Length: 560
Image (tube, rainbow, N blue to C red; front, side, top):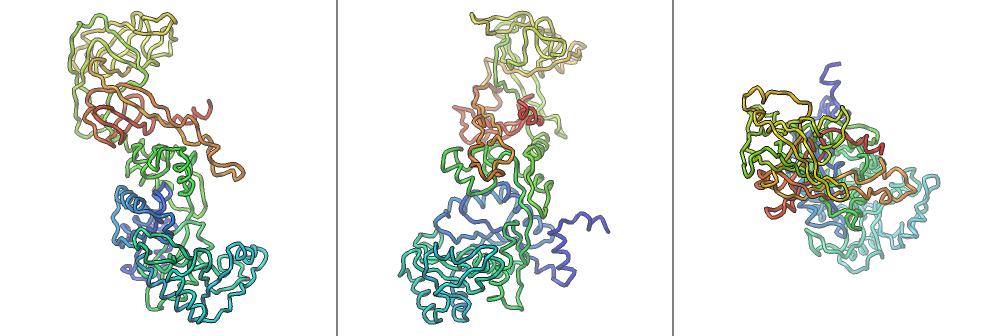
C-alpha cells in the first residue's frame, strides 16, 4: 500500500473509491449545512475543516447552506455569526444557500407525493401519535387518517399552506411503514403548521418542512455529491435515501450520506442546546464568553484560526465517538502563539521593589526583543526606573537553596535589565510585605557588552516600572466544568458540574507599549502565559483575557 493510501481517512477513502468507480472529479461537490439556531462550536469547527478541507484537496466547490426550517429558533444574528466564523477559520464557500430557497420546490414535491399515495395529512394530537409509534421492540399502529383520499389530503394540505389552521391541528406525514424496524421510517412528519415569522421568507409560509425532509432534498437540488454528518444521523440515512427515491432523477447526481464520529472536548459541552442553556440561564456572559466552546468564545479568548485547524487535523476523522482532552487543544494554540505572540512585561500580583542605589528620579530606556522565534529579530524600548512592580511569588524572605528567584542576600536578573540583590523588606503591622529593597549592579545591564552584563545568575524575573506601568483588568480562566465529562452522567444535570472558580478577575500592571494594542491582539506575558486584548478593552481601561499558560498545568490543578 502506498504512503498516500495509508494517510487517507475513511471519508477520503469513500471519495477515492467513488472516483475509481467512475465518478468524474468535476462532479465532486461538498457542503457545510448549519442550522442558524445558535453559534458554532468546536464540533462544528471539525466539520467545517473536514468539508472545506475536502474542497481544497479535490479542488471542488463547497456550499455554505443554512438549514433554516425552524423559524421559532432561528435568527439573522446566528446567520451572520456563522458566516463570520467560517471566514475567520480561513475558508470561503462557493455558494451561500438556504433551505428556505427551496420551500416552493419542497412543497411541490410534497403535493406530488400526496398524489402518488406517499404522504397524508394526520389530524391527531402529538401525544396520540407518539403512542401509535410503538417502541424499538414493538411495531407501531396506523393512524385512522392514514387512508384519507388523495383529494382530501390535497385539500387539507393546501389549506394548511394557506394558514387556515392552528398549530398542532394537522401535520403532513410520509406514508412508509408503521411496523418498520427503524422507528424513523414509521410515517415520519414532513410538515408542521408554524405561525411564525421566518428571518428570510417573512410570513409567506404557515407550514415548514421538517429537517429530515428538507436536508437530503436540498443536497440533491445543489448537486452535492457527498453529504457528511455526525454519527447520530446514521439511523436517518435510510429515511434520507427513501425521500430521495421519491424525487431524484436517475440521470442527475444523487448525494451520498456518510457519517463520522463526534469529537467531544473534556471539561466542556459541545451541544448548541446545552450551550444555549448556559447563555440563557446566565451561567456565562453570552455566546462569546471565553469559557465557551463556541468558535466566537475561543476567538475572544485568543485562539487563532491556525490553532483550531491544527487541532481538527490532529484529532482527525473517526467512526467512534471519543472524548478529547482539552490539553490537546491548548497545546495547539500554545504551539501557534509561541511563534507569533510578542513578548511583553506584565505583573498580575504586584509587590513594590525599590532599588535603593539607583539614581532617584532617573528613567532609562532598555532594549527588549519582541519574540525570540522571529526570523528577523525586532526590538522595542522598555522604560526602567528605580521603583518597580514584581510578582509577589517571585520573592521569598526565607528561601531554601532550590528557590532561584529573589530573596535576601542573593542575586537575580531583571529581564532585559540589571542584576539585583535583595537587601531588606518593609512590612505593615500584620507582617505583610509592602516593599522589597534591593541594590543593583550598574555594570550588569543586559546587552551592554560588558563582562558584568554576561555574568550568569540562576534566576531571572520580570517587572514593570511603576511610574510607567498601565493598570489592566486581567481575566484568568479555568475549566468551565469541574468534571471531565459533564455530559457523561445522564442522572446528573450537566450544570451541576459548573466550576464556580472558572473566572478570576485580577488587577495587574502592564508595560506602556500595550496602550496601542488592538482588540484580539495576542501577547505572551513573560513567564505568565498567553493573553489576548478583550473587546471590552479601551484606552481608559485595558482588559486582557488569559488564553493559555506557558505549559500544561491542568494535571497540577486536578491534584489539588
